[in-house]
Amino acid sequence: MEKQLHLNLLASKPPMAGLQSGSKIRMGPGRKRDYSPLPWSQYFETIEDVEVENDNNKETFRIYSSGSIGPVLLLLHGGGHSALSWAVFTSVICSRINCRVVAIDLRGHGDTKVKNSDDLSAETMAKDIGKVVEALYGENPPPIMMIGHSMGGAIAVHTAAANHVPSLLGLCVIDVVEGTAMDALNSMQNFLRSRPKTFKSVENAIEWSVKSGQIRNVESARVSMVGQVKKCEEPLSSPGVSKSIVEGIIEEEEEEDEEETESNHKRRKEDDQEIKKESLYTWRIELSKTEKYWEGWFKGLSALFLSCGVPKLLLLAGVDRLDKDLTIGQMQGKFQMQVLPQCGHAVHEDAPENVADALATFMVRHKFTEFKEGFP
Image (tube, rainbow, N blue to C red; front, side, top):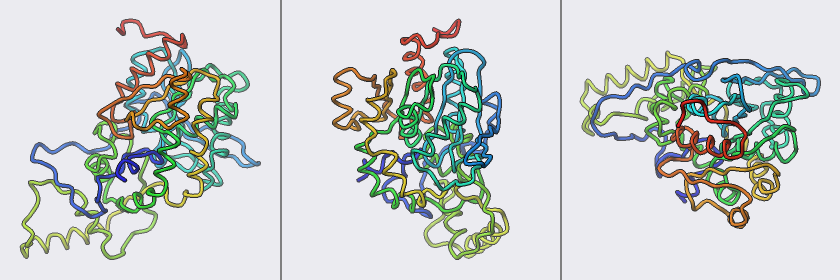
């Protein structure tokens, strides 16, 4: 069950087995880490809202960009995440090869604004990608390498298969395999229910993401989680809400004995009241409401991936994830595969250097680009 939960719908590794919102995560003693948010501008050069026409409606897609020469790396994030999940990876890959990076907030995610943000069907999101590419580059787009993680990997495959990006050079899919993803769908609602509903601050959300194992790289979590949460539109005053926020993460050295002293109990009560006064933070997208689209993202994905006529790279967090179709395809040399151990499902966040190395090597080998001068 835990292996199934390790997946694939989300851009995150689910929390440790049995972890519920409000349960304490006990950490060993040591110096306190910095969980303050980091700005996008530390990793990307520009930010832009790209306007597209959709059924006579103007819709805007938030994109983050870097680089000025070479092929475009079009980056598609996983479910619940945003383009900011690619921030650290972007700074690394731009130091290795000549390339341009364009990371998109997908429909319903981040700061993208569309009329129907609930329509997360594979077909609609694939069309979105084509429209954004056309809005950016017109009828003659530059060579594009599409890279997607989890849900974004599935959408990249659907986009490529439908030929929405005519200048497609290659395809890189990160940690999403049809068989494992389909197996995990039954467990997904339980996982989503296990997450905290609210956080008292962005720092609190960042800390939770690291200590729960969703993102194992603190630097990436500090820039990425900003795109996952938003201020609650209305104050939440339901019983127990603030308790789950306050108790969600506690340093071991700060823990008290089970029998609370009277002063400690009083302090907790004051904390609860203080939090209720503040603006709480919640998830930007309610992933549980997107369930009707999950199967459409992943069903038939392996055959679709193998049918794409461009060079393909599959990056996985574990070798046990290949299903039958992909195992046969890999034996026939239809795509290149690399396993990156010691990282969770958010591979590009946990190990951005390793992902950048694998991708740079793949692209140089296929003569899509060249290593930067001075890079070994």
